[in-house]
Image (cartoon, helix red, strand yellow):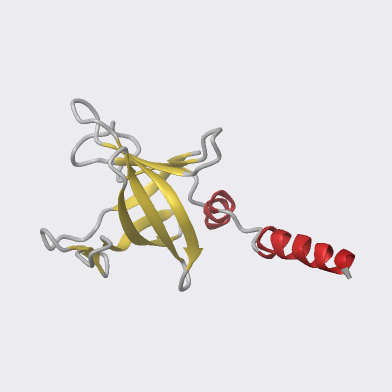
Length: 148
């Protein structure tokens, strides 16, 4: 009886590992998101041509970095979760570093372009709704793949 209890305990402990072999990095890879994206890859990063880079550093924790060029500092997020949504959409929960500010967003991918479709803070404040930035009413920029 003790042997069965031990085996059951070991199986229960291993179940999370066996049940979910989908990781954030593999989800990003499957969605085709890893690499660098920009509105215009032929131009350097700037306030009107932000670059976004999705990467998996040696730590294994996926990251998203936005670069607007000098004199601005990069804004870096650790990607906490990634899950496919509707056709061509990916839901991400990201945490801004070092402040540990969380943001939920949904990306929409059409061909080789990506756009923030929706984004909100944990308190429900909407930043982007249906591809429109709530602060200025403009469409969220559509980023093209620059490279891996």
